[in-house]
Length: 113
Length: 111
Image (cartoon, rainbow over all chains, first blue to last red):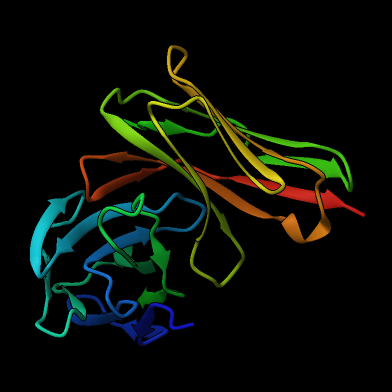
């Protein structure tokens, strides 16, 4: 069965650089979520999109932005990277109305040097 | 402000016995609760959920209990198997598109 695809799987950037993370949800899923998980921490909800519109916002810094495109894939753009942005970034997708079980991708590990 | 708390960072259980993972929450607006299992280098995998209007949901070896008055839920795994060794997260759903995760409990099932 198709799963959530995230790219790249690993990314190394320098401070003050920008990064773009991509997420391809499971086909026919209408909602995409982004999470940030720091070392030894719980996944922190960043932002979600339903049918290409932003639906909810969590603890996403102003330096980050995200969007969902017409083909339902989503991108998380991160600018002016800081050391503290080093984390695992998960994308998840779901179908509204099915109990909202989220299906997570394998994550992108971002390291900021 | 941690809205979902898993106070036990780790738990060890003998194979075949029951594993009980606990979760406390503070947000009364949660309408769904979910449990996820996570292996290293993988994304969380959905296990089981429960609506806030129910007090029990069962799926095979996994049962989730919800005590709304105590703002407490628990996941029971019976019988525990070595393959169940992972980090378990509980999460509460606020609104339709926002989920708040707990801090996780690392379960180790001993053969």
